[in-house]
Image (tube, rainbow, N blue to C red; front, side, top):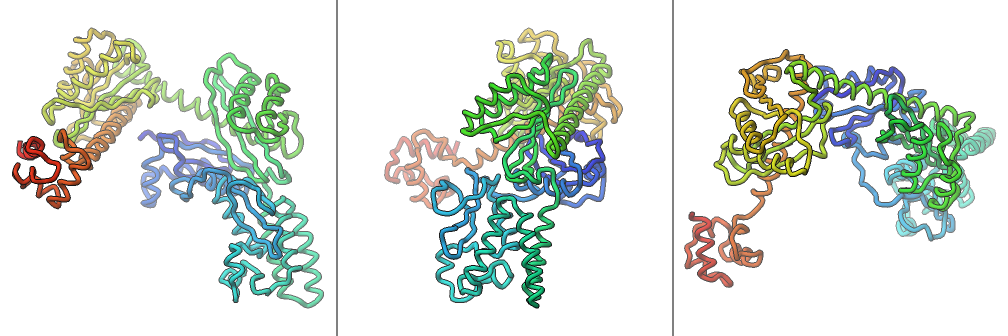
Length: 597
């Protein structure tokens, strides 16, 4: 796999490792993004789990922050939100969860709630995931020992449970705390959930002083610990001071390409960001791009109360009215910012510019490799569209052909195709290649797709001759055929190349042109093997009885129950099979013939 583009910034931030399908595999933080991410690509010294991770990594995305503390907070939020395979694995919930407080009871409880909010009590949220609610509830237990047990469990306690022993609950079930003292903890919990942790700290400081003055040192120590924990929670991040929901949208444009950075802030937490690269942005202004993005995104899902943007979008008043109606609450789009909001926008703008530079750099390097391939093979034109075929089977069983497509040096997965090869002798790779090419290019000349400039074949002169013959039969001109055969030791870098039937040639192992050829060939190989394994597994999970006409699920079950298994059916004669209820002589003969052809 080609080495992903690595970040050049030495700023602190968060990095996300993605596979070829765009799935986030791992999220981490770094004090120095360039140094940290580069360390994953060492040739040796990686732990086995890290090596397993890196074998699937196709790209790396980064988000810069102002401090490492902010990066840590963002990393935690992103892990809870995206649930990467190599960090944690949480269930993907279908509705947003809330924290529920049963304020109508004598000893209220805190808990996770999902669904309609029509019960008595207060609801705090929504939270991005159930994991985020559970993490908040665990933190609440350390700060304010309010019970979180179910009411049935609470009513039937005769002695304190384990939560009290580990100082996570004040045991109101056994009246070890008075209703008044318990209510103070509940009030503090409510203030904290409302984002008023500063008021909680001030109140705790007062109570700590009062307890110390009264020589209640254990009580004062508990207040001290609560204050210390709250101070850590109040570690400054750029969303501090906000309790509402808002999004920050920044646009960066260069050379006809655009990048949009969207940061989501919900209930005092930075839930992370996402990068968008809108198509057809050539000739458009930033205001037009911003208008198109806002109108499309927020008419698919409700907008928050505020949207902060880099500049005023086209038809801002119209957008505000439409989005407010759609969301069911007032939506304000603001671009004249002050204070902390200016810094949030600066952070989003920097990330938008960084993402765009990374994308342009990657695109230019891909084109550079295609140009190097044209020079190396002395092609008359730049091979903008390239297709590669490969054949995969096991001892001739379940043969599958793959066709992968690259445009401008980048994989175009939407045009990938697999073809199940039938009616050929097992192991005949030439016949399999010929059938795959005939079926593929017969469809293309009928207008079902675009013909390639360069056709790569995983094989030598024999496979290339099959390709040339098919193209000639279908009267397809202008397609260059390139055979890619493994070298003497079957090592990467020793490939022999056969261009339109000419003698073999080789390229230097570090040639950008050869690296592109290897990438395309390996992708074709991977795609073919995956299809073959899926087809083989499907066949091996299929009973031979399913292939016999007239033997449906009920008769299969009767046969297996009568004989006790497939092996006994194979050993049985026609008369034995026909003795099974529902199996006549004709069907019995078919079953016998299936196993004794």
